[in-house]
Length: 321
Ligand code: ADP
Ligand code: TRP
Image 1 (cartoon, rainbow, N blue to C red):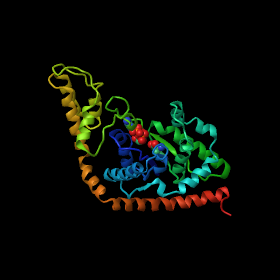
Image 2 (cartoon, helix red, strand yellow):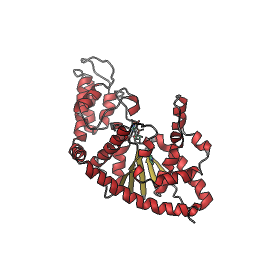
Image 3 (cartoon, rainbow, N blue to C red):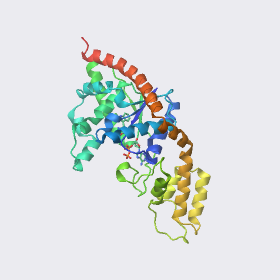
Image 4 (spheres, rainbow, N blue to C red):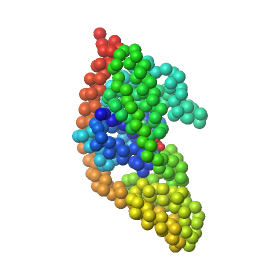
């Protein structure tokens, strides 16, 4: 069973990305053959700054490797190191009705906000379909925001197969219902674009500042407090076991401590959780050539499969003669 997933290198990763996606991706290495890539071509739809894209691509690789991506067991590469995907993207474009793309949520959201969409953003789902179909992926684990893209992939594969025969493998969606949306420091969904994120790695002072910024109600120190809907408590749930949570609930219900104390508890938990990965991360940050070698090795494994599949597809559509 082949599992495929990608992440865009479009900013610093936060604990929402970690619990929503990265952790699951790393764990899925035990469930099947994982194909994971850094979606650098996709990031071009929003990133127009060369150094920013380069830095984020490298950092995404370092973070994944530090968190447990195993480049021997899995195939881990940067999307643009296997440009065969662009050939498939073009071929699939000819099996993608305009109406299908016009119904795309992310394109519709952006244009309704007055953002001028370019062709890259409009055709983004076709490139995602190419990512999935090029590697005969069986399962694509996605969050809610990506469901439509996998459904589009199935539609495109169907049209193609109806024309040329059973060439493309139909991917199954795997939507994780137990992953709730991780709230940000303002209580809304944590997202790079809302400025409400909490980092996993990096400067401890920055992480402390982010945690201290979490919005709470203004119950006084000497009053008991409600934990049910408190953002600090909700974030603590990601890091604590049942008995730690019970203890925290007691602290909320017993007067005498303020939200500042609970935030420090959360901060300690965050630092404790990611500490084991920090040494590895430092190592990779200081050995960029090793990271590049790992990515080159991943790209060559992925490219071998991509070339074989493209040969079959080129033959099927009549590009070989
Ligand atoms: P952002 O909203 O910060 O730009 P992305 O859209 O790049 O994040 O998301 C990358 C991955 O992380 C996706 O799989 C997405 O579902 C997941 N993710 C992002 N934010 C959250 C969150 N607050 N809670 C759970 N998962 C999230
Ligand atoms: N569009 C995905 C995101 O923004 C990233 C992605 C690109 C992807 N190609 C993919 C995810 C193929 C799964 C499969 O999160």
